[in-house]
Image (cartoon, rainbow, N blue to C red; front, side, top):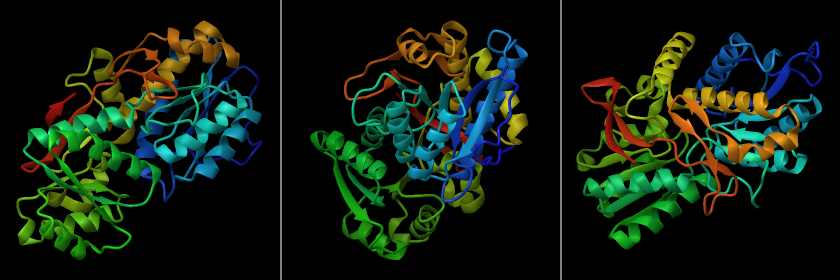
Length: 370
């Protein structure tokens, strides 16, 4: 299912295909499972577009590049894709990687539709060239903070690793919770082993621990350590970045991975289009599709609409973002300018706080909607 990256210049097209560059993490340290789901959604939508006649009779074709969660590799891939003549770039899951890709696309004047990365400041300056489907981090994480407050949590610890994304998340939580009586205790996972983290949670009287760390390391060892510490039997573990969404989480953690609330970008009920796409994605993935697979599908649906109505001219495509109105798998997609967001933004995709049901870890429970 995952397409291996081709060496530069390896593509041969007959000139009739419309090319879209696809950035996805398919090798470590990238989150491979997220990359596979994103690619499955992109590929399924390309198939559907071509089955419906393509782009004015021309086939749509993906040119896939593995970013491996490496910002420099992503920027180099955007350069290569531009040389290969792609009409636009799509995809990416990791925020810091998408930021590098967005900066390069902006510099080159190449349209980039970001599927899945949420960092508010996707580019340093406002740009016409970049649009995004995923909700901004500030939007989703404030909804998550509302959920925590509603569940009675006011002393919230975050186990964090150094990264722009995690630092941004911690700041959003702190700024939102402080005026509402909440305290955020930041614990640096470079300095703490999981057992020492448990001692800190007890000493700080934290009632919730949020995992602002990578998966599977150190997220999985942290969860196991906390679950086994009798002093922390009542603590809520949370993962706003969505680590429990994927099957690998349940495989690695079993029952320990249940009842850990996370953010998911799906509506309560899928539309007929969403339900049809879900069935096809399930068949393609041989498992339940994550919200990331739907983000991939919607990305191509939008780009196909733009290409049909505005052609492959880069400037015309970029100028079309404010005029997009496309039925996606999760609602009607339109882009607008949003305060504090530097790119064209879908305002907003549906947002849920969900967890895995302890009685049936393959089943998700919706705990809160925003």
